[in-house]
Length: 188
Image (cartoon, rainbow, N blue to C red; front, side, top):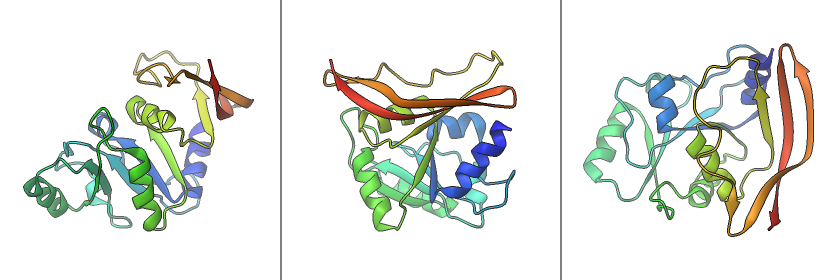
């Protein structure tokens, strides 16, 4: 049931974003399959253009994959990736040499993208939170211990401000618990 909800949320967004590590590990298509609705525009944050040529996202017919990288990449590599089928968006680097999220969102806004579902992984989620550009969080808690990666790449304290989730609501969704929350920043 929570996967159906995830696909319903996907269908309501203009775009869906993941990081290159999630793409390499999961090789997702980022489509809507479990409900009626349109597929969101896929966006991959790939600062150093590591996308593998066999990535399934490059073969989608409905949306050309948007690949966000830093402007430090060589033109030859950008051409190679574009020949694989992606549209490359060059962004200035942030303080960690990753794609600068505000700069990326500005460019996506010029393309008419107004809503983005950030589906993962931990570095991408952390980047959006650190930029304070998250309107709401939807967290699924499943009663299954599988190990995996932490949800955040580091604690969410930015310039002395602590992230709290307020207001927060939750409900069961089959065996899972879905938490809806708005991120709020409080000075420590």
